[in-house]
Length: 175
Image (cartoon, rainbow, N blue to C red; front, side, top):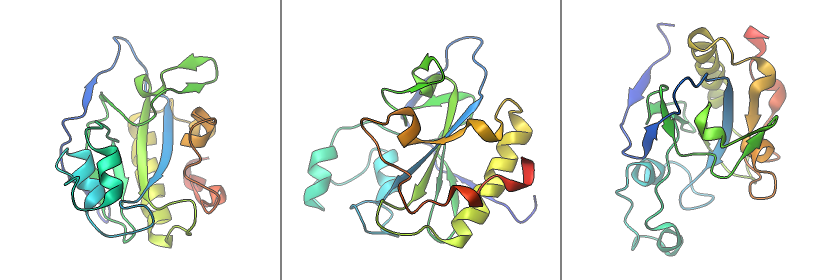
């Protein structure tokens, strides 16, 4: 995948997975900071604990939260890795999937720069598919039916990736 690049920007927000854990789930999220604003760089700041809580009123409400994802795909297609796959990123929170709690233990989190009110970009879908293929090659237990949204593992709390995410556009090359 020579045309696919992942940029590493380490987040301090991770820990170890439970011993013997098999990575077999991908959870897709959407985030923008401030909400509804894209290309600000604040998601990177948030996941690396350098977000200035004084910069926007919304930021004071999330000040002190320690969250991360394994990957983040910006609107223009840049892919950032915050946490190595082997480690547990803090993305799903209180969650449940097919009889198992604590999805962070066995999942990879992918954040897309977006929200519940805007379509995602075509380049984001292209990069997401390349990333999913990369993940599938490393973690064969991640099958198409184990690629879900945050809304699927925490339905009472979360709606992302939201109504404008087109599930038909992902994972087609390895189904």
